[in-house]
Length: 343
Image 1: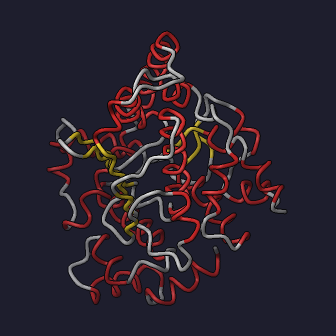
Image 2 (image 1 turned 30 degrees about the horizontal axis):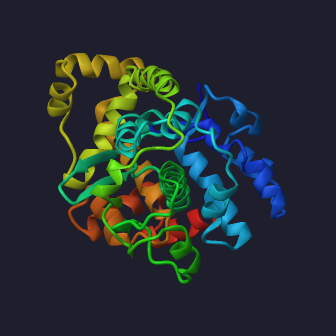
């Protein structure tokens, strides 16, 4: 079961919010109405088996950052967050025999915790890199990225019993006005406005033993995460799969129904028949996904109109403007103003 008012295309384990209400209370923020506004009951954060919509969870963090007037809100929450909040995944990381075991566990099972649009881990002679991004429908994820990276760094520091210096931290988010808290949290060069989130580790770190190692517990947690990963990979509804494929293809101009059918191992007639059961045609689904993506992207004031047009598959900004005006009876600028006011 996934909780939240989002589309459910990307989800995250609910227990990452386990300590959020308590932390918010320390800075005089009432979390309940914020969570309710995105369709999440705070009780679900105590359920280690539940997942919540990633976009909804990200919106909660972004709202808290806005209310607290703290662009490093998630870094402070990560410091407050109790170890074990990510269940078997966090326990497995903490019990790994060596840092290399820890890193490979992270690379293998992170997708059991949160859905990524792209995730890759690479081992090179002098550096080990993880890089990732989320679905474009997760409109604002800056705070979630900060929370995730800070939590990973904390685990590595516990494993090495030392504060390490890293080769690089790269973030998709724009450069913050005040970098002091970021420099404190991330010991290494910082880059902002990048194409991907990345953390680059020195290879020599991998050789270190974990003083808190417990091989038996580590193997048990690995089995639990393997089960979680299989669950997260269960076959999704066809419409969800199609939406994800459409979103991915939009920047390149979209994908034809024939190509979509081939990609999903069925005939065009079968695809159309299965969509008809959901009272949809393929053209309606593409239009729905495109307009939903436009609304999501316009809700982020940092994304230019030209970039919105590009990501949603329009050949130029004038074609994009005409499509928006036809659908909403207002210009993209007016639509953005209304969406931002509603948020």
